Image 1: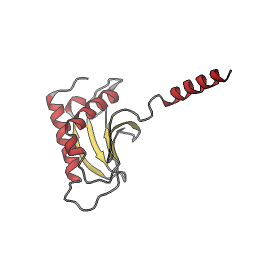
Image 2: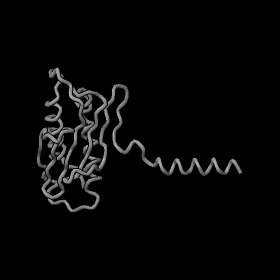
Image 3: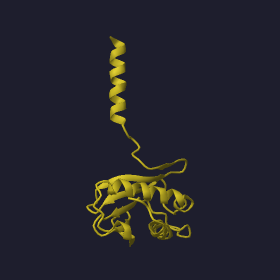
Length: 148
């Protein structure tokens, strides 16, 4: 799946609407993550808070009826890119830190953590513990081999 200029504009407008809901003029800083729910069938891109209250939605025309097996991985890449593109807006939302943008499918299953904002760090994309299990297995194997 490639990203058209129209898709970029739709996603950026969508993300800016999310950020507007949490503007710095709002004195109540909620503690929430932003859940981006994506439907492969109808191209709906929706944003929800932790209480499943809808923040905003849009339809990404290019994603309607996309049957690609790697749809969510490719969409995650595009969303990460757009989040990074407007990071000055995303990182200054009036939400208690840390907060994350999480991609979900239309059944509310978590696909990927797209963007994590904290006071001192920002993590873009991927799982924080990627390949942790294999790293621990290798560490244990090396440790046991040294004891012999």
